[in-house]
Length: 231
Image (cartoon, rainbow, N blue to C red; front, side, top):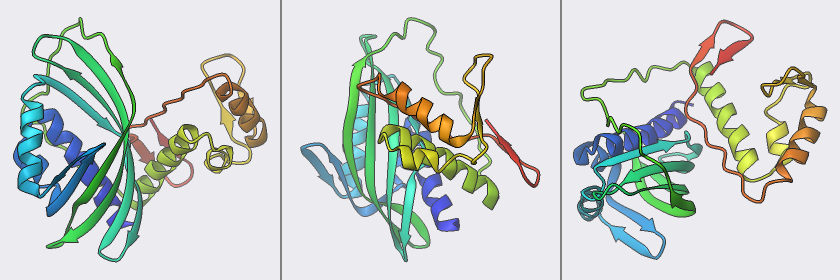
């Protein structure tokens, strides 16, 4: 569990560095011999990867990079992870677009820390986005408390499994995240009771959409025995 949480934290550190345009912190997420696959383009070696990334980021005065905590499988000092990402990027001329994609990654433990050995990106969506409002940018010197107990990690993983079930349209995976007597509130006066009924309603709703993107950020979780509350 600690290894999985550290790898999930690695993806958060990566995203945090993108938002802050911090090449040093972003580069620290990579193995010295890391490989970054961006479709047909592959960049090898941490130094070359950071140089390429810095060149890309120079063209985006504003970049929001949001990630779903990684689905992780650990095998000793190596691991595989899958992370869904959403980027909102504004170019120097003011035009903006949104990108949604998935990273399938190989991670390795180097000098006691987990880093990316290889990141493989697949785009799921790209299109325009309206940033006509105030672009405030990332606040400076914002720290973060990453202390999380085991129950919170498991509940975050539950949210990731739920999102994975939606994205893959896998009703069995999605259903596994529900209690048998679970209740689904969808902002209407009528709640949907029971796992079986909830799954049937979800199947009917999902069938209406040719593309479904469901991304989650780490939940704010309060654990007081059973049950717990998350947002």
